[in-house]
Image 1: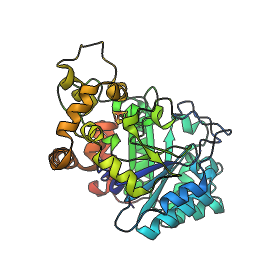
Image 2: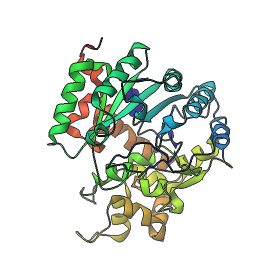
Image 3: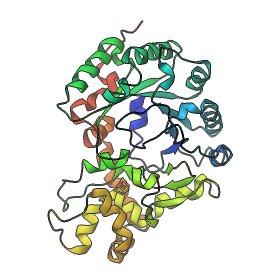
Image 4: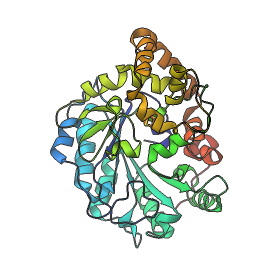
Length: 363
Ligand code: SF4
């Protein structure tokens, strides 16, 4: 499964499921959004496999993305989830920091996990390179490509003018051509989705700025299922009711899908975004004194007028039509448009090197 095919699903409601398999990680990257250490928690394997077992051919996500912490500290669980998901037709991707790659190694359990999943993505940035060298990551990518695994790199820099981004993307393209697509984003103060969503925070609040990050449910390491991957929500520091979708111990995919799809407030967040919704119900926003994009979203539950407005426009066939129209408009820009909006616009084209027709150069 190509990176661009995964990103093309990112705006579609419940087309994907993100799962934090463990808080633990043997690396100590300075910018880590989840501040993982070796002493974190693991998700309950039985509960996760039961939840994935609730997928059916007609009621399932298209892709499950396994993250951490470091998901490949649990390669057996990665394989078990991928096999269980595939019985319903769901594909699986894994995002790793490649702790195992030191010395250019691909240990047998990791090799087996890479063969079992449908996409294998490695984080690469200045912080990771202090932990695992670029040469070792490139050596592992060559082994993965040789065994036919679809791979990509998730690359983070400090901004569009970061010289590291220019240098590393040139090195990857020169070595692998289009065989290793790149998702390039910019490091933000805290958290994955919060970082992406903050990119929209300066937007004119009167304009609709839908949140695509509320499209895929996210399973936290404690089994909670939330409507988005904002790190404060995933880690449980902020738990607004309107973003809570259930728990893997007690719910199945069909129930989670139904809640995510039909809850009016969520639908409106995905259709116009939290700032626009706040502006609509208050009449105006006070420049410079409003909370950021995600914080305004967390507070929507405290604004009864917001829930009322969402119920009026986000319910039933009308709400469904408004949301579908908003998603279709933005989806027409494809994976490159998504990364332009949420990641690094300068490097967005690298998410789908196939379009450029670059040939592979790796051995
Ligand atoms: S705006 Fe709301 S739904 Fe979107 S990422 Fe932020 S907290 Fe999550």
